[in-house]
Length: 274
Length: 274
Image (cartoon, rainbow over all chains, first blue to last red; front, top):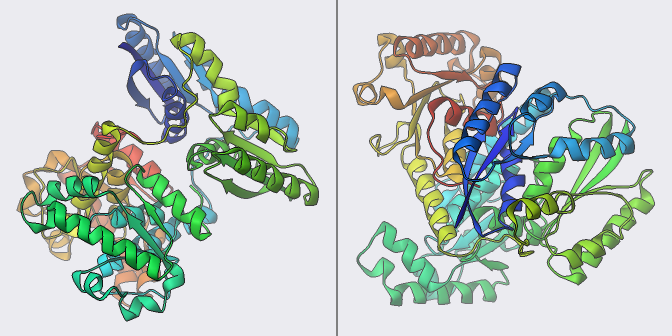
């Protein structure tokens, strides 16, 4: 398989360049990509250092590197362009049409967080994270009145990471409750959840995948046995249907996708935007 | 201030379109942006629905909407283009140069997670998240041998959300330890940390900001008093210097930025890429 080095250049974290680049290179699967992020390029020295790294790679690789960059300052962009490689720069392409459309010159300042609005966003994300931690796994707090959404599902169906992602990324207050043996036997939800059925969202997963995940945690015993896994999933889906809880099968989805689907399906508003 | 509606269109979560669009519109601060994400546009019906929404907005707004889109399928892209607005599409712009460079036709398949590599990435992120939770706040586990990085700092300096972000986003094993009154008095790190000084990374913050954050949690008492906050920060920075622990002031940074700076400064490898 062909090898290519892909650089992500940024005067900030590099997340934008990575996200953009990743969604593009996955369209071309005949190559193996070695991915290198060069963040915080905020001076001419650092820009020249980046050029050096790219050129060194270009000299040893069989093909020239691909460079995704999101440098805001024109002088730094100019330096970086000297590196040998295919350059794809979102500011080069999209800044001008936006300038015309909005009838304003771009600030050319890197978009680092500052000002009260960002402090507020930070606080909201922290508070949402604390909420998720305090209300994880049916935890002691059970502040379900405050929850935007309450995830329910069997153990290891993806509830905790999804709640944390919703909190960190969107400031959404997400609690979660793991369905228990008692719930499966009664076919009921506990009373403290029945008051909040409109906030419930179910996660399910295929038995094969759940078994695989549980085995990582506890290789032996009933917890990861095929019978137990199938039983729990069947009963949990019955409960979702009985109480009209919308649910999603997480097997094929990343944490980002599960989170987006929950927001899309429930209509819960993001409290902050990334 | 001028108002504009900005749409983020995607056949997936919309995260790429949001990230791209956000980094561009922050360059033009003379406008107030109302941001609307339309994710999971994966059929002609949904594409037409999106066009309807955009056109309705265009009809009521004083200016036409701005549309960032990352639709992979050409037929859906074509439908969406009918909406009135300024269209900025990364696939329109970047797919062709990549096709030439890589000498391969793009798959035009939406980049949803599938296959074993994604299951592995999912597992790694989950395991890293479990690690962060078990090793949060100097927690019971203290599996510091397994940690990629151990964050230290005073209470509310941003350790927990940063650890969780490192885990969820990059699969990095991040533990954290809150410096205690005892540590401040002795000017020492506890013995179980001294074995791992090479993994330590410090977080600090300005007294004003820390006080503001702590007041949200406990408005009264010593915890959020100016004296206590200044004392703790001064002593924690002394400890960082004494043990040559690299550290960053988190006051002006978002969680993403803190995380990127930690990876950049420590050289810790990402175990997965978003």
